[in-house]
Image 1 (cartoon, helix red, strand yellow):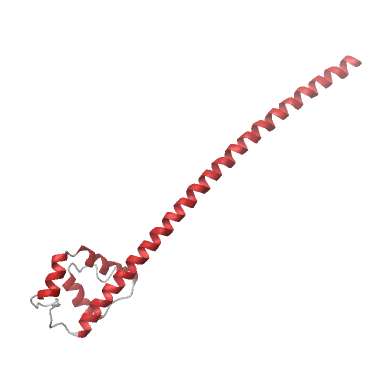
Image 2 (cartoon, rainbow, N blue to C red):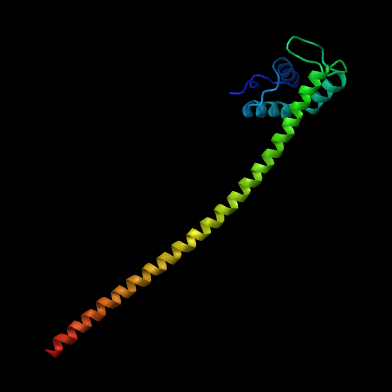
Length: 144
């Protein structure tokens, strides 16, 4: 469970980061990214351009914003960008692995078909051997 799960707005996230610092736990960073992603552009612009009325538990992103607050927000944005890049990288790896799995599946099917053909040929050869043994037995009996 992320420490940011109960946070719904950018203002609440920034207040939390300002109060306790940015968590580097993967779950927390993912939650922070979700909060930023789910925030409407209008909300972000309103906070950046006009600020929001200061209320308990919220932070204004107006010109009054102090340097540490701005740095925390920049850290969240940077981590968001890093996580997005990591997500793209992982998606590429998943796609590569899926392609490799498809190729391996086709190879396995080819080997299974080859195995079936070899078993069929073996059974035919065994049947022919039994037939030839029977003919040889009949020939030997006829010679006696």
